[in-house]
Length: 108
Image (tube, rainbow, N blue to C red; front, side, top):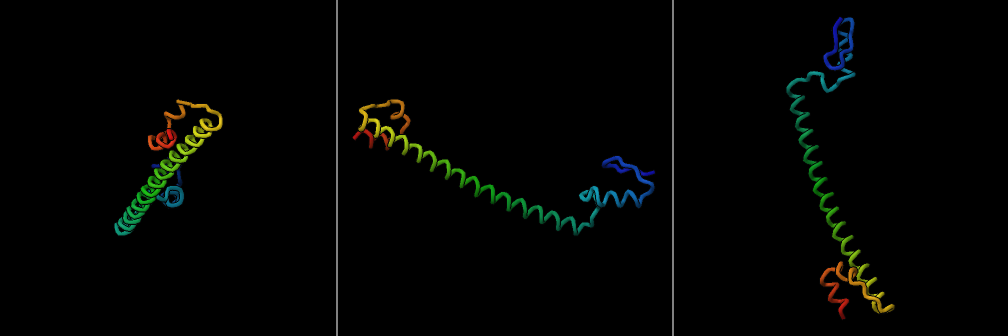
């Protein structure tokens, strides 16, 4: 009996273990040096591609955050101006949340 070093399954002979290893643990199967280099090149290309995608996603997420922040500031300003003009209510806490350039507009 021979035992798989990875999962400890037992087989009658080396041929059984070899077939098991090839199908159950394909990453453990030995390959020649040329194939290893090809695989490493593919892995390196995939890592570069993933890195580029991550960079683009980070850029997009920052743009989204910036736009969302600006949109909420615009909504806050509109709410502040509505309350001030239509209901003569001034909410200092709302005013203080506004960016400085929006505060200047609201002072008019």
